Length: 355
Ligand SMILES: *Cc1c(COP(=O)(O)O)cnc(C)c1O
Image (cartoon, rainbow, N blue to C red; front, side):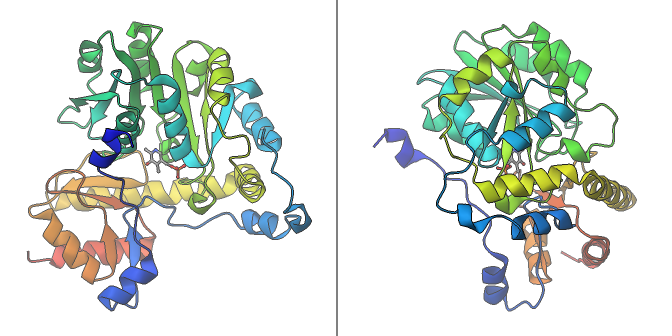
């Protein structure tokens, strides 16, 4: 076995709600720890999945995901060959790490950010250098440029960033990419970009202009398809051809493809989710302002906030039916924006909490 595997800190997935409920003796438990879609999934997805032709079960799925590929490339005016699909964006992160990192290489991340970037770099026996975000939560692009070395191969920009929720402008990202040497890939993880209410927030168009920028999307968040595992990356065309070589040929199954197609077509569902989320997010930010609780301004479907003895608060909330994400930064909690009724109850719980 690679030595590194034995030393790795694994990513700990969420426990099942049913399990937790049973253990804690709760009749209701709302998971606001995994940034899932609080409003469910488009009803069109159910129709599409139920109508899926079961008699194709013995056949391999379309390895090209052609229908989905055509839809996405049309929407963003891409060459269809720019897209590489993964079993969730998680798998795309694995592929990118595998393709670009050799033992001894380096990747740069901003901190705090999504932990899977570092995990997969470590598996490839590469080093991870992290550059802390500013006090505002914004990415320190100048610091990232300074941290580039001869061994740097990848730079991760999560936008909006998980867990801070903060958004970087496309022009800041473009200015950054222009200064990064062409042999280093800049990976922009847009898992939450649909939730951004700032106009023109996506860096997608930059993939047509620069040879070293990749933009990643997932169906797990705004489209409410976390269970189906579909994500993709958009590459400059010359790069995607090589990345396709490491993709398992039938990675995304037919039901997932059918579900993603239906979800992608139902633009009104996503629009509605984004609107409701923005409204609820605003109410949370007002609550934090009113109660002098520090948080980062969010453009995502979650908010990261600071609270004294945060783990104790999280434990209290858990025993009252709300699961938040702990352990990302000392005395900070990440809260997925939920449905109105849950947000209201949760704010009352926090307001009344006496430590
Ligand atoms: C949720 C998340 C992902 C992974 O999404 P999947 O498509 O469900 O694998 C990737 N990046 C970030 C920042 C995320 O928060």
